[in-house]
Length: 270
Image 1: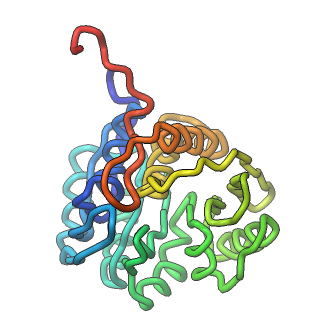
Image 2: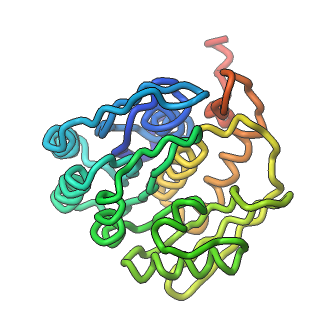
């Protein structure tokens, strides 16, 4: 099998392998893409929480983006954890130079264990400068609330928050509804003239570490392979649900999901 698309991932490292760059690489690879990376931060973490975060110098992040893309031009870019305002500025500069239009932004702000992964100045910069460069933005409900100041209690609130993010310049917004109570998960995709709601049964599991990173990378891969953004979201959500439903059980806290759910091992390698 040959890779169908080339994806540049700009995100932080998760030493436990469940989220961040590690989850992104696994997802892109499992879905038939070729993953490249620009690492924005190094974290020491496991399923119980984050011990420490060290940012990579902004200049070196830009070097990773430009030098990688100069040799292997990405078909799409997925952006995850950006730790500071300076890093966001360098990432925007890099995006302008590599001129890839398929950009998916996952505005990572808080780790599953509760640790804050981005400062307030960076949040403001992300909101006012980076969102308008994005084809799709994929916040969860707490992230959407921070970005829009809208309190989200239901699907209508999700639509309202998404519309504000559209006004910030995003072409499409997918607000993930996993934080709402109930047996059904509603994910809301909004563009300027259209709204689509994806409805799925909520899978009860404490092992959901990295679902946001995984979903945005899955969507980016499907989008880069030629699917429409609506179809890419639908397939990405399906992949994540299968990965949660696989129910691997690693670690003592919020464990990872199974990124290999889409992969079958060829007989000759068994």
